[in-house]
Image 1 (tube, protein in one colour):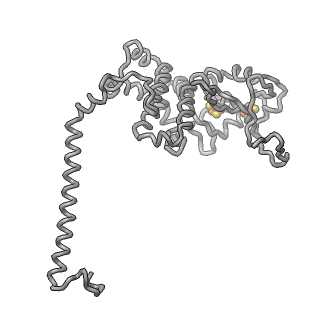
Image 2 (tube, rainbow, N blue to C red):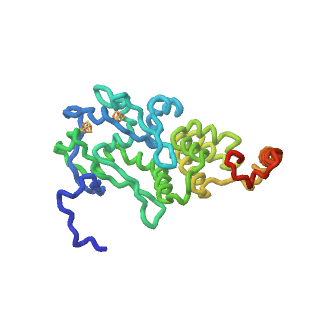
Image 3 (cartoon, protein in one colour):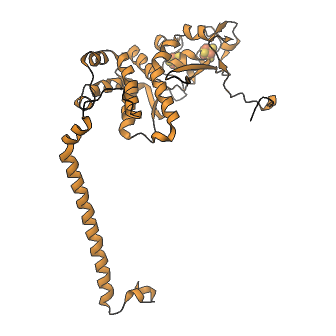
Length: 320
Ligand code: SF4
Ligand code: SF4
């Protein structure tokens, strides 16, 4: 049906529909220390962290990924499949733990949504390509007075000044993964518990992910040439990029990481004894159960015959 001749009365138009802004769209916004709402946005936060946000913050704080996750974040489920997400920890009133009177104490490495505050962003798949890009929209909150400031800039100028571009670049693979999972819908089904654990490691807990890559569990299945292995293990940014590639393999079966020839067969050979033992134990347990049920049925039959009449055709309810 064509919508060209249709009008929505002004009072029925939703203010919640995001106002998409192109890179060249101009808008007035400015945040500075002398503004009356200074720090208001940091005192009521609900920040979802991306893998690159976590990397930058923990490097700033000189913490391992485990320590950062434990002390500064809370987990949540991003979808009905339980895909793990991470939020910034706040105090009981919802204030970010990094806010100080003088402003943000991790300013140089603040997360992407803090940098973009005033605008929101969405990842969008580029039709007909395998690429994604971010689109921006207005995210005007009542307490934010930045919108009343007389400072005009384009979206492109704003994101560049806030250093958002590098965050969007490094978060692209992760966003691609999320979009792909969403667009695959129910067809890929619920990822296994192991896949979700790998997703958590590869996205957020990079120290643990590195240990996994260095372990025999990884090298039995995947093969990386030495130069790539060394690069991944010595540079967390490379490790993060590899994590996105690795998860495309794990979640969607894309052959994005080379596998050891006949890895599945070799793994079966190695675990053959355990698999056979488990199989035999299961068969045995099944046979024992079947034998018990058979004995139970025979015992009931014997009981019925002992009292001298046919219990099956007896109309006395107490007999059954
Ligand atoms: S990280 Fe910094 S900018 Fe972001 S909410 Fe916390 S204090 Fe505010
Ligand atoms: S509420 Fe808006 S203007 Fe005020 S400090 Fe936060 S971003 Fe800046």
